Structure formats: structure tokens, C-alpha cells
Image 1: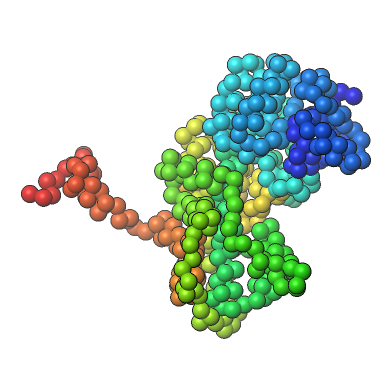
Image 2 (image 1 turned 45 degrees about the horizontal axis):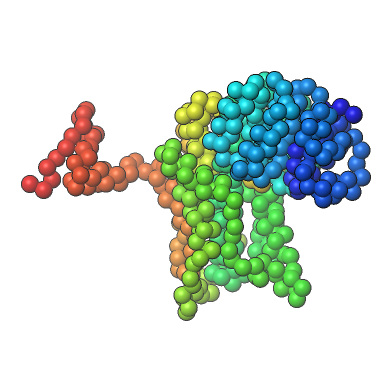
Amino acid sequence: MICEIGVLGLGVMGSSLAENFIRNGFPTALYSREPFERDRFARRNLSGYVMTDSLSAFAASLQRPRRIVMMITAGPAVDAVKDAIAPYLEEGDILVDGGNSYYEDTNRRTFEYAQLGLNFVGMGVSGGERGALEGPSMMVGGSDDAWKALAPYLQKAAAKAGDVICCNHVGEGGSGHYVKMVHNGIEYAVMELIAETWQLLREGYGLREEEIADLFDGMKDGRLSSYLAEITAKVLRYPDEDGSPLVEKILPVAGQKGTGKWTTLESVERGVYTPMIYESASVRSFSEHRTAFPGYGSGYFLTLESDCDTKVIEDALYLGIVCCYAQGLSLIRKASETFGWNINLAASASLWEGGCIIRSEMLKDIVAAYEEDPQLENLLFSERFGDLEQEREALQEVCASAMLAHIPAPAYQTAVTYYDACFAPELNLAMVQGLRDCFGAHTYRRIDQEGVFHTEWEK
């Protein structure tokens, strides 16, 4: 059998995506260097694929141009496999990296393959094992020609959100992996907001997990409807063997694979303010080595007296999540301008409407905001979100409650700071620049005159 598409790497994600292609009617070539992965896939009892045990046999089983989706761990392994399979490829063939690779590595690999007449494509994939099987969100970089050859296969396998196909071409080079990296940064921040909400309700207000789950379940039909809210309720309700909530037994240390850190570093490099993403990535690192001081903890001196109090928490969470998206999309916008990627923010945000971890009802308004104004500087400025002062007051109230209860809430607190920084008539940096000029003669500019100035402050 000559196959239309190939999957290289049959781990959890690779096996699921391979089954997705097969179930969609595409004859699929498969390769893994691990015999147990090949045997495990065979037990799925599928037909319509060719299993191979060498790269040469794998390449020989594919029609031209070869379309190969590589699903392996990001890092040196990608370079090793990229170089190992190159001798079996021909001009115009396409190798897709579907892992969480750093976008600069993807830029380099794209250039190296182009020198050989081959196409290297960086593709961000979101949705986990279930998404890969049933329809992931896929953010595709690379050349236009490579995208045209891949589109019928990837878009058929992708998630659908109504009429929206959650797979499209983002731009050249490493742009697909860049958008996925920022997607993950947003994901970090939204999860941190949810975790802070849980801790405030549990330790500050004394609610039980079942009651908090009810609150998140109540979001499914409103503007906070999202995949993360849905699974939060499930995690809160899941019982341990003794019947108590399992989440109470989980060690409060969160792992990460690097994309949140990369997003933070990129924010600094591009000069884009993303404090919520920074705090969310940093607190994970802090959780691994922090020392808790004995005798310092929260007290149950807060009370949810009415549904109005619950509404305050929902309003605060809503604006906090809007700020997460605003920060991430501002970073994508700046990178697109810097690298000449011409990323369509409305189209990119639409890729997150289904299949991915940050899919939410809110994305409909986000997409519409960028469709109405493609040059929108910041999502918070869109008329789609209207007057957010009520939500701003809710954010402030939630932050104050957390502080009173001795509960750290870095994502909520930086959400307030970010919102105020966006709308403040002026920032306080005049003083910073004055101090820099005083101790280091770094000069300054004036608001009332053109030019660059220096003052002898300590005469």
C-alpha cells in the first residue's frame, strides 16, 4: 500500500493522531524505532495503514510529495530524526514537527531543510491525547506550498467549532510554534487564576470542594464557559479511595515543560508586558523549592453572604481571563511585526475555539474584536468588551479578600496591575528615567520639547 501521509513517532500523541488520520480515511504510514510502540499500536485493531520498522521503508511507503508528521519529544531528538530521514527524502517532501519545539529552533531547521530542497514545517498541536484522537487544534507554520499540500489532511483531522476549522496556516518559519508557545503561556495564566479562585474559596471562605465544583459547573452556560472550567469541576469532585476529594491529597508542586518560560523570555525580548504569564510560570518554579514558615496561614474570616458575592468572584475571573488573552495576543502581534509573519490575529485566535486546552466561549468575542479591527493594539480596548469597570472593581475586591486571608494570588493581583497600566493616563517611568539620568547620565526626553536632555542633578 502506498500511503498519503505518515506519522513518525508512536507515543501517546503520535498514536492518537495516527488513528485520527486512519479513521478519516487516509492510508497512513507509521514508524517508530521502538518495537513495543509498534506492537501497542497493532492492538488497536485498525486497518488502512502500513507499519514500518525502518526509516527507509517508511519513506518508501509514502506517495510524493511525502507528507510526514513527526510526533517526538522536542529538543535534540528532533534534529537527530530530521537529519536521519533526510537522505530518504526528495525535493518538495515535507517533514512536520508536531512537538513543542522552540520557534528559533524551528526557524533554523526550516532554513537547513530549504538548502536541501525540502520543506520543514513547525506545527503547534494542542488538545492532549484526546484532542489528537478526536480533533486537535493545529497552528501550522512553514511555506505556503507546504501548507497547500498538508491542508486537506490536517484540516480533516482537526477540531471543528461550528463552522470553524481549528487548523490553519499561521505564517512562515517558526510562527506556528510561536503561536503554540503563547497559547501555552495563556494556558498557564488561566490555570493559575483558577487555582487561586479555588484556594480563596476553600481557605478564605471555607467552602467545600463540592460547593466550589457547583460554582464552576454553573459557568458552563455563561460567558465563563470553557474547557478548563469544565474539567476544574471534574477535578474538584473526583474522590480518593477514602471518599475525600483527591485534589486535597495532591502535592502542591506544579511541573512545566518550558513553554511558559519561553513566553516570558520572549515578552522581555519583544518589550511586551505579560505579568500574569510571568507570575504563573514563576510560581510553578517557586513551588518546587519553597519553604513554608510554620504558624503562618489563612483564617476563615471571610463570608460569602449572598449570590452577589459569587458574582463578584465570577466577574473578577472573567476580567482576569480577558487580561490573559490580551497579554498573549499582544505578544503574538509584536512578534508578527518583528519577524514579518503577517499573522492574522482573528484567524489565529479562531484556531483556539475547539480542540485546544484554552478553548472558551470568550474566544467568539475575541475573534470578532480582531475581525472588526485587525490593527487593534490591545484586546482590552475593543468595544466588544465594553465598559469593564464593574469587573475591575470585582478584581480589586478579590485581591483584597485574598490579602486579608493571607492567600497568595499573584495572577489576580497582576491582572489588576495590568488593567490599570493599560488605562492609566501616564505610567510612573518619568521618575525612573530621572533617577537613571541622575546616577548614570542616561539622558531623558521631555513631554514639552523635542530632543534628548541631561541634567546635572547633584550640583
